[in-house]
Each structure stands twice: as structure tokens, then as C-alpha cells.
Length: 512
Image (cartoon, rainbow, N blue to C red; front, side, top):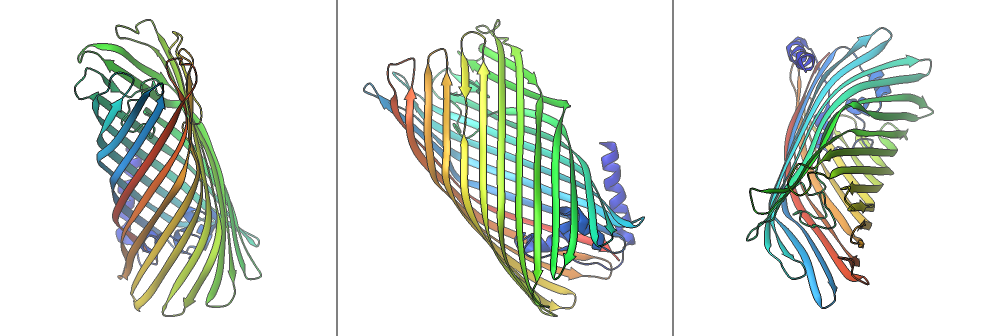
């Protein structure tokens, strides 16, 4: 970490030596991040071969803060049968997220090519409080819950580009350190039960955000890389990059903890499990820009990424009832995202430009959670949850030159998603408990951005603002079998989430 902070101090020290400058990431943020739709100098952060087109020595700084307020984040689980109506109704009464993103670096000529060194840091914190209405068999109590999430992400990236004959070649290598945590606390208001970081997902459906959050605590290093090629051919500008990352499990740690206190102050069940984090990610980006004439460009893009992350843990219980139990658990997350589409970019010399893009976005994620308590209880929660969504994304972006050294810009991005699957399935072997629910619905959001660029003698300053609203709403039904009952009980589950966000940031670019 001392070396990383040394790099930061070095970069701050050298910016005062810069000369003239041009646009940077603040330009994209001020138009709603229409990357691939409107070309920008910062595109080499996606396609390393694009760094070849830079000139001179340049220094970069970018910072952005986003505040998200969850208007509501609720789930309603009901199941029926044998003359009873059991339920968990969860409501987030207070929920906020705070997201900090920063990036700084430099690019400069090196040998026959061009080099870039970048350091980035991201911190995301979430605090979600609420209450639950809980009724099961012959008892039920109102409940409080407190759920927190925290992410710290440090990354160092080295980018090098080199022209070779009629091609531009680029390579990126880097390391990232991640610390990820989700934790929850659940307390019945008038009863003795209190549970922290529940792992008994289907037997004790306590967690305030059931079934929206699985607890974990992990930190690890990841090695990542990217290789790209750029080619200009008969009015076409083609950039293709492939990327991948691999988690170095030898430097990873993962902990699970579950407490069930009855009465308060006396631990009945308690376990801290240590384990590893394993996984990888692979992806590719292809951008094609067709230059029709001096003013009109037709951009197209295709992007795909697949990622898998596997957390596990094991330990003996340390409380009164489970001191002889050996707990084992595994949590596997798989995600797949595909984006494809194109648009129109029109530029007027000495005035500005405008871009319109329409894209198809496919999203898929699946969690598998498995827990064995070594005393006959095995919880096998496959597809917990399984999410599948088809989404259309519309980007509108434009900028206008007000003066030779001053530019204003704005952008709107809108998406509408058809959630065809948001399913849950699990079973607990000891009691032959089974749950299977199939949900679908919608997911949509809209955001707007405003920004500007002001050029001074040695720096370009690019401030920007953004705001938006998002809504997620799915429901469905299925079956539930509890306590080894004969036959299945019909069940319904509803999930709703609505939030608004507000953000601000700036970019600085120094360079000749």
C-alpha cells in the first residue's frame, strides 16, 4: 500500500508541469457515458490499442460521488395450506448507498509506442434498516433488521500501445485488491430470537431482505489483463479487445458468521467460518465506426462478459447447542452480460455534436448456496436467485461549443427491462423442506447528465452532474413444503425496489 500511495503523490506532483490539454472522462460523464457512441480520448481505458493515438505527456484525474436513496425495498412471501396462512413481509424503512469513484494516472511516449499508468479506487457503502411482519404456524412477531454492505476496490493498471505496420496493438496488465462484505442483523421486537448473518436460508427465513441478500465477508487479490487491436480500413475504424481476470485465492479470506440468541446474551448457535475465494472473468469488446462523411458517423458495438466467483468456508460451532457441529458452506455466483447495438453520431465543425444510440442488453445471474451442518441438516439452495432479463437501452448525448475554450453538454439514458426469470429454489434434507418459486416482471430506469469543459492555459476542467430514478418490480408463485408435511403448499412472492440517485464529479487533464 505504501507504494500505491507513493504513486498517488508522484502524480499530484507532476501535474503542475503540464501544458495544453484536451477532453477526458468528465466529457463522457457529462453526456451520460455514451461510450462507443461518441468517440473520446478516454476510450483507451476500454481498448488499450487506442492509447497509440495520444501525443505528448498527459496527466489525468477524475472523481465522482453518487448518493442513492431507496424509496422502498420490499419483499412479501406468503404460503398457504392446512388452514394456515404464513408469511414474511419485509419493508426497508431507511436505506442509502454512498459510492465514491476516483481515477488518476499519466500517459507518455515510450520507445516506439505509448505507455499509461493508472490507479483507481472505489468505495461503496450501503446501510439498510427496516421491519418485518412475520407469522409462522402458531407464532409470529414483528421484527427489526439492519443490513449493511461495503466494497473497497483498489486497482493499478499498466497500458502500452504500439503501432505495427497498419495496425495498432495494445496490452493492459493490472492488479486489483477487493474487500467485499454484506452483513445483516435480525431481531424480533417482543421475542428472544436474534440472528446475525443468517445462513439457514430456507428454515429460518429471518433476514430482513429475504430473499434479496446473502451475507459474506471476503477479501482477495485479482490479476487481470487485456489485449486489443485497432485498424482503419476503407472508412471503418475497428477496435477489438479481449480481457480476463483471475482471483488469486492464496491471498483471499472469507468468513461467515451466524448467531441465534435465546435468550438475548446467551449464544445457542455460533460459527465463524474461514475459507477461500476463487473465480475468474472473461470478456470481449468490439467497436466499429463507419465514417460516412466529415460530419456523419455510424458507430456499432458488441460487448460480452462472463464471471464466476466461488466463496467457501468451514469451522466447528462454538456455542451451547452446536459445539460439536462441523459447518461447511459454499456460495457460487455466476453472471453473464451481453450488449449489442449502434447509433448515429453527427458533428458540425466549430459547433458541436449529437449522438443517438439504441442497444440490446442481456443480463443473467445465478447464485448457488449450499450449507451442511454435519448433523443431518443440509441446505441446498440452487438458483438462489436465478435472474434473467432482456433490456433495451436508449442513449441521447450532445455537446455545444459556446466559445473556443468553453463547451457545454448533456445526455439522457433510458432502459426498460423485461425480467423473464427471477426464480428461487431450495431444499433442506433433514425435514424434506422444499421451496420453488418462479417470478417475472419489469425493471426500468432513466437518468440525465449535465456537464461542461473549460480550458485554461495548462488544464482542462470538466465538472458534471447526474440524477435519475430506477424501479424493479417482480412477482410470481410456486410451492412450499415445510416440516416434512405431506403435499405442497401454494406460495407467492413479490419483490419491489424503487430508488433515486444524485451524483456529481469532475475531471482534470494536464498535458501538451
